[in-house]
Image (cartoon, rainbow, N blue to C red):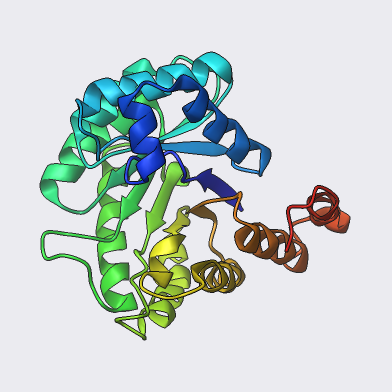
Length: 266
């Protein structure tokens, strides 16, 4: 399971404040904490700030890589100019994700060339100009169109991660089931990966960590390849470690035992 740490997101008040005040220590601490908890990539989202998103993106990526020289980063923005600014700022020896494209013409046509030029991995959301579908079949249809498009343009689909966009079960109770159904359907396209921005499933519910952690285990059992999560949250860390062990992806349960000894489990 590939983990992308979600905490450096300007929708979080403390991160927004740190970006505004150019608080290097706080931003770097958040990155290091997530890497220590098992994240392979650090998601950076500066879309909700009081300043200039492009300058903020440049600054955040620069300060993280100055302290963690081999860090891998997931550049996250709905603004392709901000994505491009982040790609140009990245000088480290790790690797990159772009988050994200959709099937909307304006989005895919602006962002896909960046992924090809900079040789990044790429998150694709199952959205088009009509919005987000309710059903697994609708998600699969959009995923297929995106898959075909990126393949035609020469992008390596092994680096494509399709997010079928889980929606809150508090308002749409069938959505977790539809999302899980879509995972295997999407994998049938061929050499492609699945990813999930997990926390939306529990929006509006109490004890969200519990719901998120159970849903993560269910999705992993259905073949989910990657997740954008908070790896420092103990419910999530526990579910991830136990699920990896149960699915045979943690040889002799080594990572599970290490997580227990380090106090990262519930």
